[in-house]
Image 1 (tube, rainbow, N blue to C red):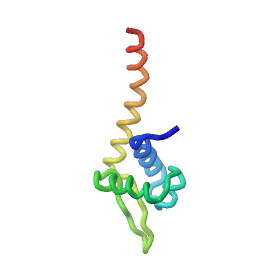
Image 2 (cartoon, rainbow, N blue to C red):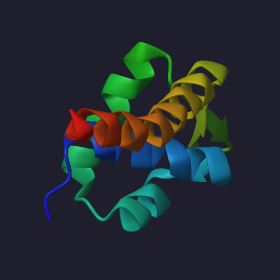
Image 3 (cartoon, helix red, strand yellow):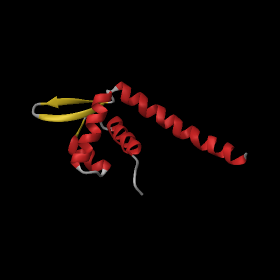
Length: 92
């Protein structure tokens, strides 16, 4: 089943929320997408302020920001509410 862009963004944020900071290659393996596509996703999230880059020596790591945590939590709450909304709409 193909994942939407939103699902992939949320998956990346979830990974960063659990194991931050983390290297790009580790994110790539966990999300299971190629490096070029992952970089596009990461650049978008960097511009939105959802994640940040950190360096340790010459190594580059990624970490979730507070804004990213807030977005992730809001979508998790929404996901819990949606099944209730769907059930009430099906009864009408």
